[in-house]
Image (cartoon, rainbow, N blue to C red; front, top):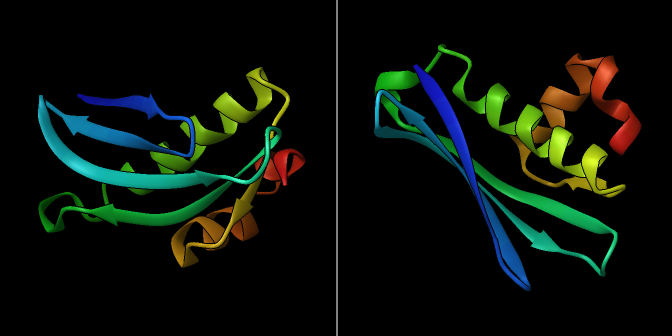
Length: 93
């Protein structure tokens, strides 16, 4: 089962994907002021490629942005591609 937890700091944060308790992926972000954050890196452990781990972390970031009235700047190529492929999440760009 996939679970995503968030650690949010003053300048940086991360979303960690856990698959049955083991780290499956990591997505990091940097705050850009008080109302925007930049997704700067996404990585998925090779054993979990193709299982939707990266996409789920991006979607969790979108939910966080929506709940807190924030915008996302996707600098990471994976996050950028996910936004391009999924029109329903572009409201936070």
